[in-house]
Image 1 (tube, rainbow, N blue to C red):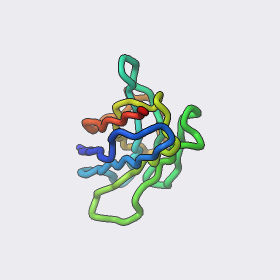
Image 2: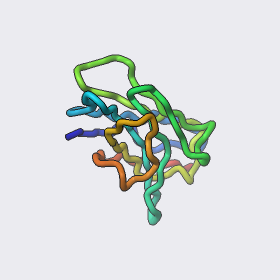
Image 3: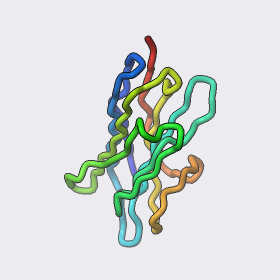
Image 4: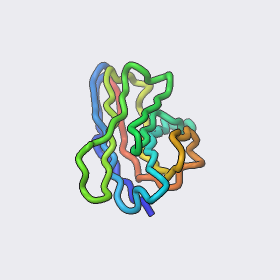
Length: 133
């Protein structure tokens, strides 16, 4: 079982920045698997979409084309037991970035993190990001 808690959301004006945090606790790894942490967002009235992922075993990262150059995913290298903290740095925010942002996790034996929301087993409650002038 992995528990996820997001923080860092808020209201900003276009062009502003926010850094979201996701704290993962519980069984964040085992002998053969590492944790993939993914960021997803759901704009009002729209489907949930994948934003970015990080493989905590090798620090590989992937991001959606729509946010490349503006958003960056990373993780805290400080080790506190099994706790893992991931970040989503969001710069040059636009009104279309307004959404509920979720952190999701999946244990994987491979080197790749899936973009599929359905394949993530654990989800945080979300944090709201609103971009408006």
